[in-house]
Image (cartoon, rainbow, N blue to C red; front, side, top):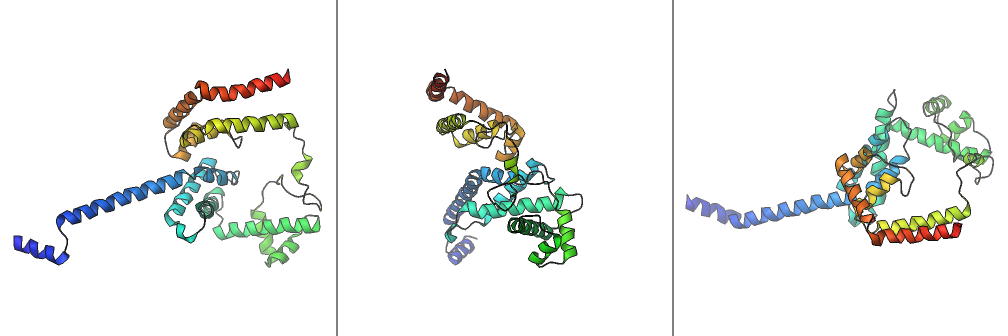
Length: 280
């Protein structure tokens, strides 16, 4: 038996000790690879959220949109090749959008709309917007069909499916500088002084938040709408970071306790004291 083992060993030219060491190195490399993937995806969670916001009110719950975006992000992590020279965020954006648009096409409507139809709808909306700017009026279906090089009836059918509420960013008249939303009064508009003070306060808050860990900082931003004004529930934040609601609550409370430290608190208190003095 020993002779047979020695014979096999001489054939493979590798001892059991060497093989065991090689297997351990492979396992260690695999664990490092998996951790690197988690770090890369975790560092781009806000990219998913920012893209997901653009697809609200498309018939799919916001949490589901985020979940689909996370799926696209993981796909991007698996396929990313840094040697090609492009940024990961640029590469991931394409996969995130594809995952979200496919999910909307599959689930958002009572009658399922194929992915290629979603792409056609987007193309026609773009053409419609360009013609509106060129003509200074709403283009006809015939004009859109001519520009898209599509049959009129097919164009009419696709546009009927793709009806959406009017956008506040839609240009008005011949000027590209005027938008529909410009003619709606915003009673919440701040004065120049208030806007400047808000910007200074935002900078001061960001300086304080940078003293926290990445997860603490991002959870507070999501929970209190810092940056985009949209506040997220514990469940929504948990879905984004793939942790439980209770874990989100724990991290949030820990971060708040850190912010209550005298040194950090003084950075904001000094600013607020200055504002009160200027108002008196």
